[in-house]
Length: 236
Image (cartoon, rainbow, N blue to C red; front, side, top):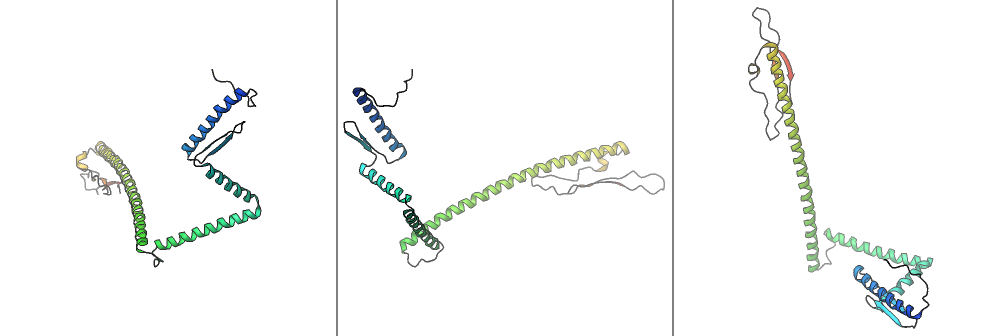
């Protein structure tokens, strides 16, 4: 069975109060120690018992924790004052301006400008940084080109498959035309065209035109021969 909830109020019995204080104090110090280790937090805990006995824990040193607390408290109080708040933001603006000037100077050095005040060691460090930057840029460029090549190959394969399907359809149409002519005129397929006028290779050479042309058989009399029937099927 689970433990019942305890009412949060002063324990009247002194013995029970002392036992509860000892247990919860040890638990509080243990949790503070674990929090400091797990989360890399700076923690300070100060406990005075009812008999004025001191118990404390500090992740670094209690003096450092208290000094940091006092400093943060003063800065917080300063922010509550409008004049102090203006001074605080003025300091922040000056710090950011100084940092911006440093970055601008560093950028000019990377561009090969204002190098007169640099020593040989400074120039070597600058050269090493530029080489590392170039390596990163080239690696990214190669990755982009590789991805584009893969994409183009994929598109080429899709186009090749589409061309195969189109040639299959053209072959079916050719066979249907040959069967139709044989049925209507009694002309065998071999007499119309022995071989389909197209070829297909894996080099995507599918731009060869296809002409299908049928002619009527000529009459035996001296009348003018009928004009050939041009089906006009052409694949470009």
